Length: 307
Image (cartoon, rainbow, N blue to C red; front, top):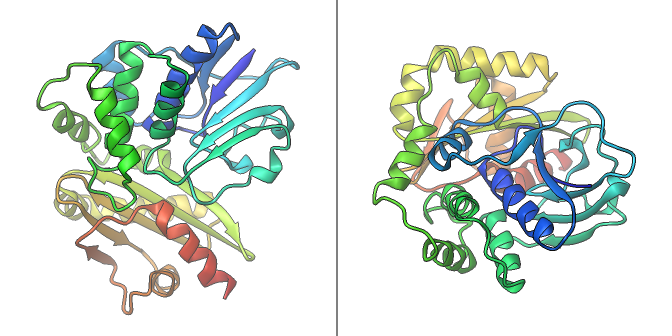
């Protein structure tokens, strides 16, 4: 059995690619299944309800000895379910700049810097002349729109736009579909704030320090942060203690305005990210009039700590 999977608590990009690629592998006569572990975000839940289609199983326990794996939207062994042995990974499809592909000695690798892993998946399926199910197409299209923030993100490439237009030509969606999708993950409350932030939070060691960066992508970012500020500080401090972080940072993206807010709750973290981002006097809530995603920040933090 080939298991197609992504990182712990995958976002829409990883889920969409796992669904589409498992369909393709099964069509090719290879027994495959899309699996995930951890939690699902609000955006995935929205697409799940919209399509009434979710052929992805939540994995628990150990995999069979003869299992093989395809990784989508991830190439970091630290982000995987602990029972996945890197030597059993046969393929990796990812779009992140920071990868650890040397760990996967038996894997065919497709690592290309586009806005969405779903773009790479769409291109692969086009080359293979395979059209996935209507529902899988909706997942892929939604993932590209989400990752590129409807093409407002600086990481957007012409390949992302072309892939999205191709997918959209195969389906019909209501005019307000993107509005609905973005709104679905913007419903932050005191009750779900920890789960939403933790679901898209990454931490890693860099030069003897442990750094964690979370990311939220919502509408009405400034109003939401103001409304939930006290709870937000509590959540970030909780994550910092639970994960034994030296530095913690939150990136907020306003999906409609195409703006970014950097949030830091302590002086040490603020000083590090001020240096990494080359922003003197970084404020507790620091706004930018353009989008800068977490994936663009990690290399800057690496360099700052190495220096």
